Image 1 (cartoon, rainbow, N blue to C red):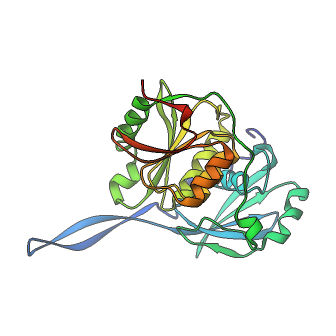
Image 2: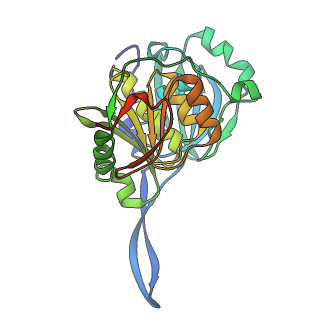
Image 3: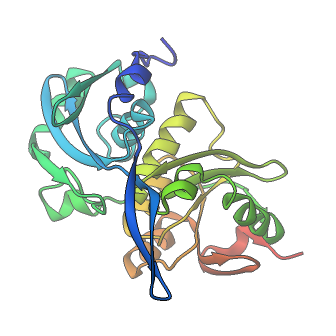
Length: 281
């Protein structure tokens, strides 16, 4: 047991569902045909089952599923602390993967009005919500004196390109990285879904007891609402994305006190909210 989280033998089970496949494909360039080997990212249905009751099916890259389950459970408000995830067991099925999670009965009873047996597509960010109030959840305001030099953001962006091993192979997965000033990228997780990659990263950070006030999150996607919500929900004060934010994401970041950065590419970036945490000297 680590921080109340039971570690199952997930690695051997996950080997039944590889993160990518190899396939011979027909390539054309300049009117010339060639047969080449291509590497294609997999997306697998993963059912999250809480106290024996299925809650949601997500399409994910079948890696780091215990971290994903913990991150999802925290950022979706199902549990409040990592210690409330009492156990996790991963089972290979013919049609996908089931992750059986044990949580306190009090938390499980609160899930009843959220709806069950919902399917989260690869791009889904509102999974498990059945009302407008549940969909647009506003986290508590984030606080802290975290400061980042713009030069360190630029350095992390450069390093990110060399850390995305699955995307280098397939060209079709997102990444979420944990970056600490003075150190750089400490951890990174990849997934076909941008929100899944972030949940995996958050689960990793929580399981390893990282100081969430000491760094920021960098994602290789647009900054949509759920990424801001998930980041702020665990007290992280800065989110940087290589693409654009949405209007709802900006409004939520304003309300939550989160520094939101978009179009972070090379030495260029746009700060949409709470710019005081980023210095340019």
